[in-house]
Amino acid sequence: MSRWGVQNLTVTTDHPHSPDVARALWVLREARRRTLRAVSGGFDPDWRPPEAANSAGTLLYHVAAIELDWLYSEVRGEDFPEEATRWFPHDVREEGGRLTPVTGETVDHALDRLRWVRGLLEDTFATMTDEDFRRPRELPQYRVTPEWVLAHLALHEAQHAGQILFLRTLAGTPPR
Image 1 (cartoon, rainbow, N blue to C red):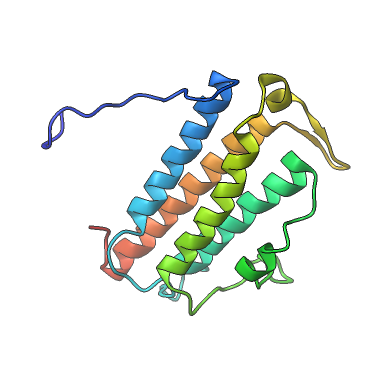
Image 2: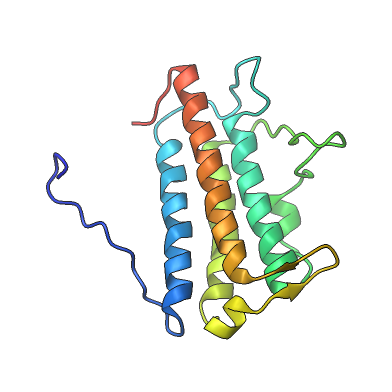
């Protein structure tokens, strides 16, 4: 029991075609809820200690870019929408493989980018059937299902939300 009363800890399965898709989307939404908690309150998204490779702003950019890439390249099998160039003016990685530093953006802009990508993902999965959810997509380097993509994206985002929380702790600006 929390200090505010009893919490309702349940997984929702409100999908018109598949409770399995609904559960996977719920997990992804829970990861996003934790990211939003990690960035709540004021802080400088460009701050990073000298020994850290990435700032919170760079990590937020990366989370959104990877979600868009998996959605379009693997699940939909399409080119990115035209509007993606507005939201993603930088390559996600530098030539050496490190994340491209993204600086000078507000947390609100980063959150708007995350919302834009998530809207595309939610629209894609809104009417997906179990059959399509589990149908492997054939790519040159691997076969992948949308079910695996959602699990991967949830784990990916949770990992980076933890990194953001750690950076905020080091900076002395933990979430409120």
